[in-house]
Image (cartoon, rainbow, N blue to C red; front, side, top):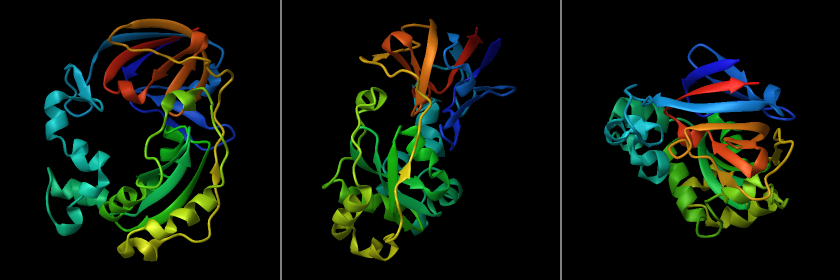
Length: 264
């Protein structure tokens, strides 16, 4: 069966295991149902997630113009500490920025390949952890805006990592740790203005991914270099499809690519 559409990050549903869906304009694929089947993936054209034009994707699913103009690609997306909506100051579109920044945010610890600190909107828990391929995670603070979450993350980065080793995550090279102990250890490093939002009594969330076979060595599929690929799907973790022969494909890293997917 042939499916066509523009790639966006896969939608997920919490379960044992997590359910993964690739949603197109007129159809969707539940990848859990096609494990061990052969998929043929073909790049057709670009489709910018903002303007919709067939322009080469620059970053985060946007063409170069939209990346520097769209409010959903502002620097505060990747660096929450740069958020200014709480000060009524505009970056690119104050109405949009207020909508996103002035809502509850979570600072969390997640363990994908190592323990790391991160920030997400409360509405994106546990989706954010799933997207990162974390097998365990815990909330540290819940704050009313993105700025407070950002300065907390910056403060804690001096004592814990803020990056995931995606290769180790995909190889399932993981170690279980006590995230409650980690949370307590980091408590004294939370900024004073955030301390009142510290979460004192919660437990770890554990996540199970639908993977039949992890890669021994990771080989990344790039649609620019390999516009047509065929392989047997062996698993899904984070935002990656894992194929036989150690090949992995980052769906989110290819947002804005219009593709055809044939499932046999």
